[in-house]
Image (tube, rainbow, N blue to C red; front, side, top):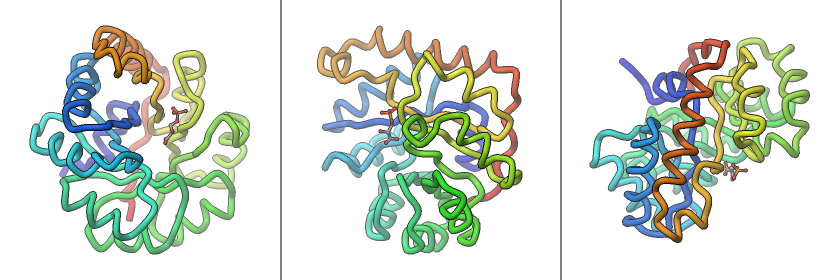
Length: 220
Ligand code: 3PG
């Protein structure tokens, strides 16, 4: 069975979506799809998130997950709405346990050896290295990748077209997350062309990256 993590590994880019309405979420999904990226991490930063997840899940052509999941209750809401993967900014055992109960993969945040060990103890082998750039960036990720050779990373936070390639090239980076292809001004103006262009650029960089994505193992 192809899991959501397999699909993320194939696309190698996880767009972080902050949608204020279902309408905005559908607009974003259309633009991402047109740019070649049928993936969306819909964050629980807006009240619209569950409805957006549901609308994208019903479309059926987008790998939809929930982001900024910080409680077990949000895991339930996300899964009920149709989220196929879950992303947390940090690690909490209650969130990990609830995700595992549902059998939905959780990419939990971890930027230190201690946090990675906590994630591993919960059965999570793909972690979100967040916030990437302010947590030491690629040098820090490289240092952690050494002792944790079986862990794969989804660096997110402060990544854009200027530093995407170097993250993608790391052998333990399964995918890169971020919101750079979805600038708020473009969303406000319903400027799909800007989003499509920036998404297509990221997709092309991922495809051209010399490093084949490592196969992620089951999370949670
Ligand atoms: C996230 O929640 O993953 C981050 O806000 C994404 O970081 P970015 O906005 O710097 O890409």
